Length: 134
Image 1 (cartoon, rainbow, N blue to C red):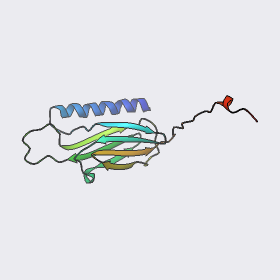
Image 2 (cartoon, rainbow, N blue to C red; image 1 turned 45 degrees about the horizontal axis):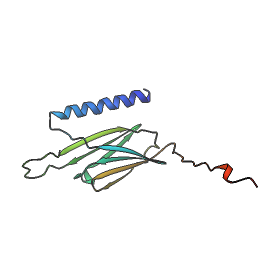
Image 3 (cartoon, rainbow, N blue to C red; image 1 turned 45 degrees about the vertical axis):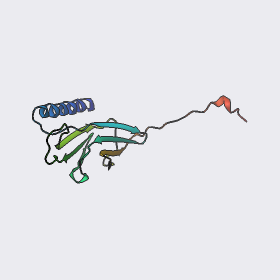
Image 4 (spheres, rainbow, N blue to C red; image 1 turned 90 degrees about the vertical axis):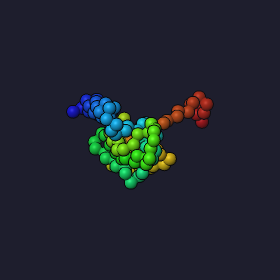
């Protein structure tokens, strides 16, 4: 399958997971962002209350899957925050080198840094007229 078809299939699978959880009180879906850091891509995932011991990352081809669990609060009498297991799969927005993911959990945010296969090079051209030839 080509990459656009795989990306669309991944989006449909994620949508299906989200729809299945609407009425079931099932898994929660943590918010996520991708950032571009020139030579690396970084996945940021909001997972407050999740211990590092419960986290699993699985990289397969053009996707990475993150799963874990946030325990329910004891003696809860009301609230909005979901608890329980979660699982999210993401398609890399750009090609990365396989198995280069480095994870860090800080202040409830999981950041996973992947080395790009083709880094972005930021080139600044100098004004040649400002430096006359000698």
